[in-house]
Image: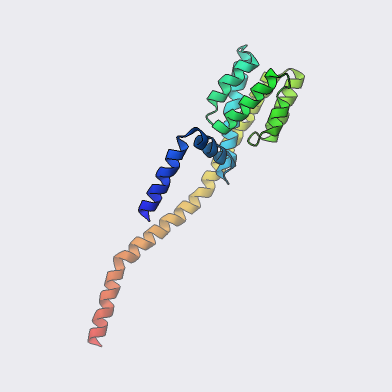
Amino acid sequence: WILLVIAIVAAVMAYARTPAGRMQIDYLKLRAPIFGEVMTKKVVSDFAHTFATLLNAGISILETLDLTKEAVGNKAFAKDLQQVRESIERGEGLEKPLRRSKVVPPLVTDMLATGEESGSLERVSRQMSEIYEKEVETSVNTLRSLIEPVMILGMGIVVLFITLSFFWPYVSLIDQVTAIAG
């Protein structure tokens, strides 16, 4: 069983090194149960912070998107940012490609579309970054409080197993002595 687990882990790691594998794994990270929501919030927070900072520095939106997609650290999210960039080059704007995205939350799309329409994209991005940073912190604290009882239960099971494995030979010996005496 141990060799099988090692082989599976090695295969997944090798697949993750390929471009298609990295894209698929990054997509799965954002869609994973429980932790996917936290990962999505973290990626959105990083995106919004970088996006707002670069816009504030006076960098064009196309260059900002190029730099931001490299900074988010998630290939699936970066792919959607590339589609946004191409959309802007065609003159479509931010909203349409963000609505088609499978990884960008609808709230982010709504906020960026509102910022684009009102001409305050940098300010909206900065506020979005602050909101998502707080949400990431809250989500991590919630997960931590949920994981603690599970870890305590797991440690209890390990201690029980060790204790039983320590005393089992003695119980077996007592049974044999009782059988011989009886």
